[in-house]
Image (tube, rainbow, N blue to C red; front, side, top):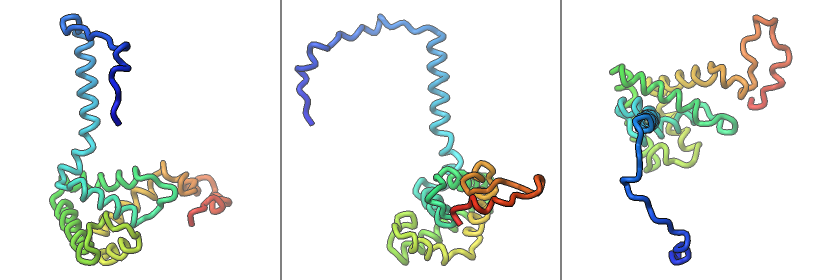
Length: 186
């Protein structure tokens, strides 16, 4: 869309020369500290998975795989799945065996997806087709590593208990007789 700049001519103000701007030491330090904090926040999360040797596309495939292993699309956001995937990638950053397991498993997953459907795993739109690819690797150490991590990361996460309709441990309080009425997702 083209704009007629003559209509803003009346609202045009002259820009002050640079010599009129005064920067105090305090404002310089505050803005520098804010910039450093913003940069660390923006760059921070990429460090763990990038240092593990995983690309953004591979990380997306792992998150898609995590959601397909334990699908709760109707009430769980991506964050708990991302936390589990990133924790495994953080482990891969410092453990050579885990790094090899993840990298070899990702290569195998993508090779199978390419061979069967001619696309990357994350690009397969049909969840039943993705499940078929996952069933072909479900006995591998790679799949079991993520399945176990997700099992503990999702179902042992106290902040997610309300989403699952679980009140937590009940034996200390004599048990909950009406807890099963709250679970609507089973």
